[in-house]
Length: 129
Image 1 (tube, helix red, strand yellow):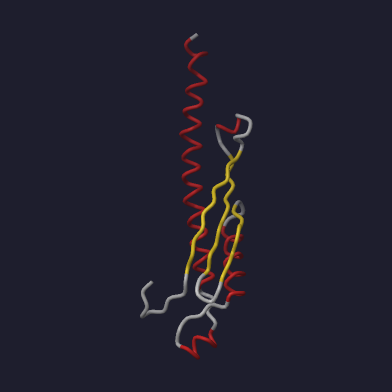
Image 2 (spheres, rainbow, N blue to C red):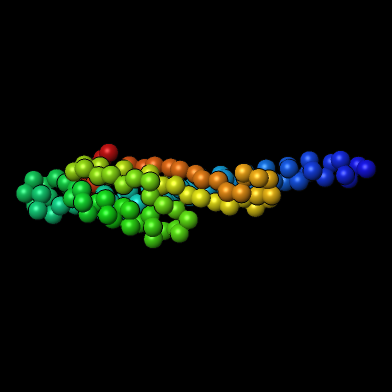
């Protein structure tokens, strides 16, 4: 009788522990992917403007495509929600979908999504953000 009554509670607690850890890890991975993609976009400097002015200026088109490409190459379960760039900054938002391991047996808890965003800017050796 004891096992029948407390087994669901133990299963629920184990599910919260395991799938909660997966959620925390997925949030960190989404943040990492967004940061790396923003940095990849911030590397796309307009060389002509750099030579002309001496200041790093982004090529917005190349920065957007480099950032979005980095997200799709990094992880198959991640997708870019937005990749925006102007001449000074790159902003990336990422969505990561993860399947539940234990709580997936409960309807509606089969998977969860985590989102994160990051911004990067080009910096030369003498500048500080």
